Amino acid sequence: MTITGIANVMLGAADLDRARAFYRDTLGVAVKQEIPGFVFLETGPVTLCLSAAHARLAEHPGPSEVVLSVASVREAYAALREKGVEFLREPANVTGDSWAANFRDPDGHLLSIFGPE
Image 1: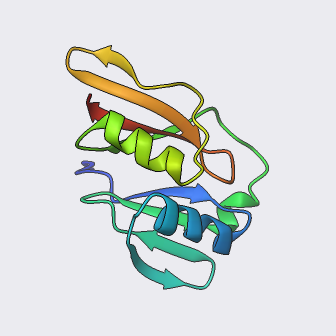
Image 2 (image 1 turned 120 degrees about the vertical axis):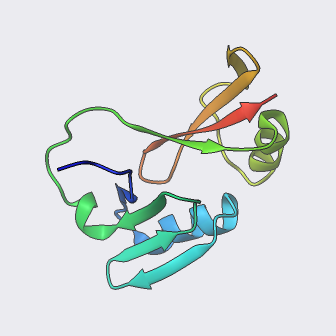
């Protein structure tokens, strides 16, 4: 067996309508497909999926983070703050020319914007 890549990242969403609205309307991510209990988001080669079933899983193996690529961290930070996103920290240089800023989605999943300043 050989793993050839990551097809999907699944995030639990306690309220699928609220999660869809956050990712679609606040973050500007297009909805690719919906089936009962799941919303698949257009995020490039790896599909981000919001799952009602995953929200009901009792055990959490550890912290995780979804890193979203942006053309400019400072511009994305300003645009998201205008839409009411509360960041855990302001944009900061994390390595070389790469910057990042972290926030949480409505279900508490850690997200970050990442890219050039």
